[in-house]
Length: 204
Image 1 (cartoon, helix red, strand yellow):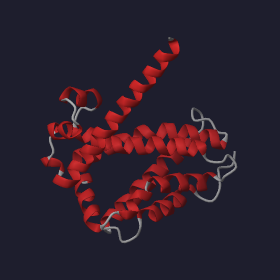
Image 2 (cartoon, helix red, strand yellow):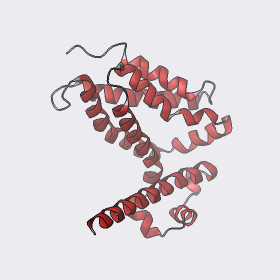
Image 3 (tube, rainbow, N blue to C red):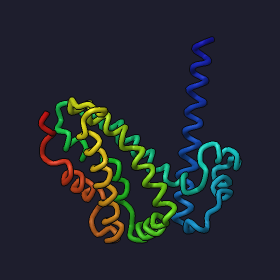
Image 4 (cartoon, helix red, strand yellow):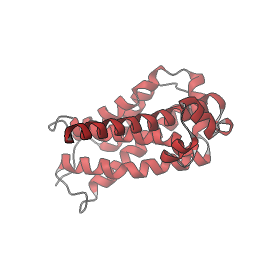
């Protein structure tokens, strides 16, 4: 009986996660297609076929829903870094996991890029995106601390590096959008990450 209950609980959690991700991705897609100001919460819930109450169980507004896509990416980056070979240089590991997460943008054309740029230029949305970046820094710092033998509670390095690489990726995305995809985003992200990580881990 306990096994069945545990299995049911796991299934419920997976369904909740799937619903949250569907709402977030749909919110972003509609905003890109129509413009952020032309998307209502009802449009998102109708597209996903859930109630307004279900939406508010996960998000307070459409901007938070869209920005949560960034949270999901950050969480995947943290998990991917944890799974990289322990003997791989940290700079290489960070470059690899960040580049992989932005690889899907390689297939976007200039019209797609322009629509994304317009959506993400919204002041309200920028604020939500920045919040997700700040929230992601500590989990990444903890993995960096594990990799470097430092202590996230007593050493500054893991926190500084986590903030730096997220900022570097954001700068690369901004440059990519401003130049309308003149260079592939994954390569720009890799270049930006390597510029801030340096060739070696810190002396301890």
